[in-house]
Length: 254
Ligand SMILES: Cc1cc2nc3c(=O)[nH]c(=O)nc-3n(C[C@H](O)[C@H](O)[C@H](O)COP(=O)(O)O)c2cc1C
Image (cartoon, rainbow, N blue to C red; front, side, top):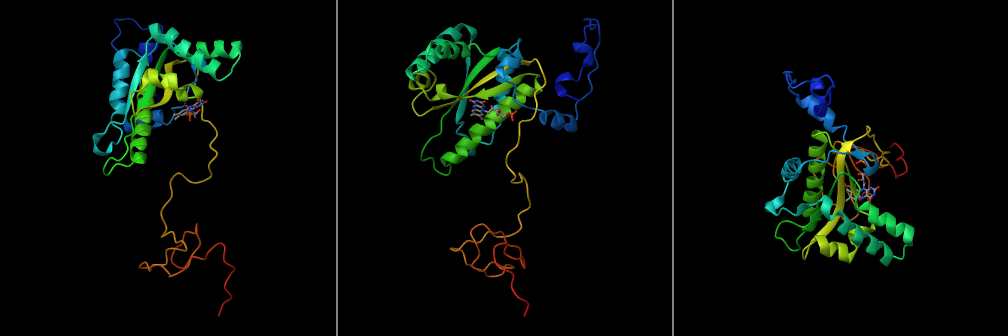
């Protein structure tokens, strides 16, 4: 069951204002299953309506629940309203022209500013030399914020896609969105999906979750660890007590 469609009556053509719709209360399982179906929806498959300002604010509120060491809030979102799309299109076109593209590609770049019923920019502010909060922790917070933002939109029945491309690296476009020390992370296009999206191929064969089985030894680490055999080890071999090194020749029995 999808959370965005818990009420079949409300979305059915036969629904009238007199209908008293009793929506089933979504369970945690419903929420998990529905979140598990979030896939990116490209601008071609996004239709009106766009999320309202209030819906975007709700999504931003959820984005702000990203784990944020010392409360630095290292990101913000900016909506590009419809009356500003031409302006952004001019910046996209100028960027494409600067990169040496011909008239067709420049026109395409200009058109990209009109992609999606709603268009937002995500801007990061990752500060250097913050005590206890290295850059990577702040970037993790930015990523968490982006994910929560997408999940919130998804729960409200909107599709979305995060896009960057060369435009986010253009100095004039960055200057139009960012203050000093900020990074233009990406564009987010969003609207009602006109078709179901699907999973993209997963290329990594490294399990996303595994149980830690021991200490990873390398040649610099020969310290004794309680319960672990002392070994010179290999850079990437994970050792369990008594486990054989996959790269060492088998040891002849005594
Ligand atoms: C910061 C950022 C920038 C991205 N930029 C692009 C892009 O320019 N073009 C693109 O096709 N996908 C881009 N992606 C990836 C897509 O948004 C999307 O995540 C990917 O196609 C996988 O689809 P999924 O979200 O359904 O798993 C970007 C993702 C992130 C996080």
